[in-house]
Image (cartoon, rainbow, N blue to C red; front, side, top):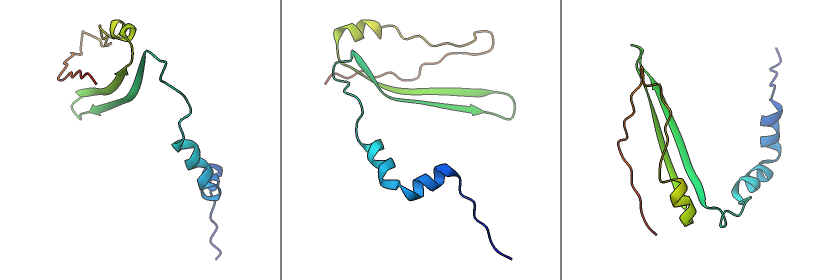
Length: 97
């Protein structure tokens, strides 16, 4: 009985041309030096419990590069439904480079 292996086209591309994929991922595509701020990292972690409760954790890192960005980011807005959700801000840190 012959064994048949079927590869998805994206997997076949990854196997056939790995250097092309990684060279594009490693080279920066944009110059962000003139932006007011740069969102360097944004991570959302959502957890659902068996009893119906859940939590959503947002973690981010923003590099501020101008005084205008300080004004824009001076007030952070978070959306939530106040009838059945609560908002807790556990930790905020600002550093000056």
